Image (cartoon, rainbow, N blue to C red; front, side, top):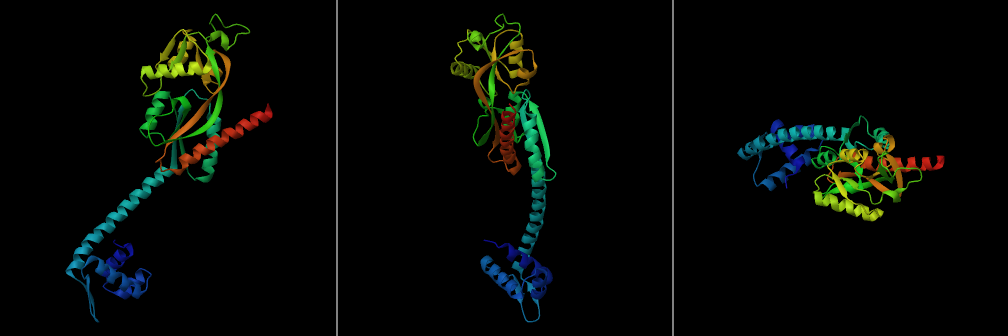
Length: 305
């Protein structure tokens, strides 16, 4: 195997034609330089220099190898600088995507502040997207990490995940629904048409199977299952009174729309996902800090309750 120090000694000796000067420039002893050159010649199988008491001169083999290794040294420096620029860019920014309907900015801000205190000059690129677009951007590596519900977990190998938090599930119903009245509960809507948003890269039959699975888990026996092409269309269908849907209290539609929310008594898990071959260490740190930020937030809410 070619030794890097031996190559450096060879290139410098070729330029200076002096073992003493080579040792001086490389901050080595003359004896060490001689040993590296001798071993290098042995490994290559050719004499690289003619040595006499009066001078040092390269052999024809020395000339050939100098042409090779001097080009390699230049290319090595070029690739090293290119690599440094790439990783400086990679480590200076973190690209996070999350569902556009989620109200999770406080937790993200807390995790980001902590991360920025450890990494000088870190840039944060946060993007809100519909569910399907979010998954597509993540799988195409345009986002380093995404935050979404567990049921929408991106499919594929080499994807890591971490739990962010659990949030209460609620049943969303149009305020104009005839069953919406004082004292109404989830029980009154268990047979209503059930609206479910399709997930990215999922067939209609897969979406229906997922909807039926959730209905079984919640004890719903809907008269019909309606698959909406995306979460926005699902919310709109509920507003128009076409059926009911299950959401969470992190949804801005649950918090700020006129839809009526009925607590279901179960929780949904919000998770973050990233690729395990992701080289930026800030990505996994952000996932951990995000979880810790929400744990702390939950504690504070419990103490204030």
